[in-house]
Length: 111
Length: 113
Image (cartoon, rainbow over all chains, first blue to last red; front, side, top):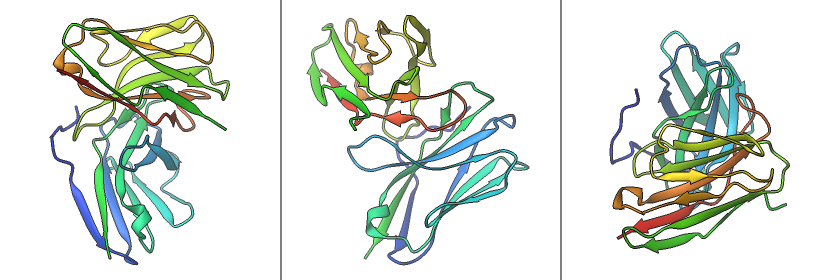
């Protein structure tokens, strides 16, 4: 099951630096993964996805890495900007079943 | 270009009151979902629907009911509100399940006192 807690882990980075946000997923059979960004007071927004037959996928300023051996997903954001400040969470899916969401990481970008 | 629209954005209820959270999508998606989000926790699935007339329980359905009379609308009903239902509720829709993103509404913050 998922670990739960009242306080989100927080990652603080300097503006312009690269950010790496990690996610440990729970089901070794999951075959599809999505990263979402949630700004304060808003609904989650899709960032990037990856299938289990891939190890890496790149988007605009973002890269997702998948390590199936240790059930680990990471999101890399290049040249982090103030607008990147948000909560980021991963979601896993097992062949068409409903998504399971992680608790999220709060990214804080320092000026 | 509305996407998923939720109303109301904020609501305060007294214990034992009832209310309905409205959700509408204009993308002709068959799949619709209701989630709740509590501080520091991942989104938890309350109910979902794979098409008009079909609904099913998610992970945390107790205290809630849903209906899906049309493709566009998926209201969530809270009967006999309890403080444990204080949360932020998100409605979402998708074209398919297991592939492709979920499109989320802006959320409805509910407080039960």
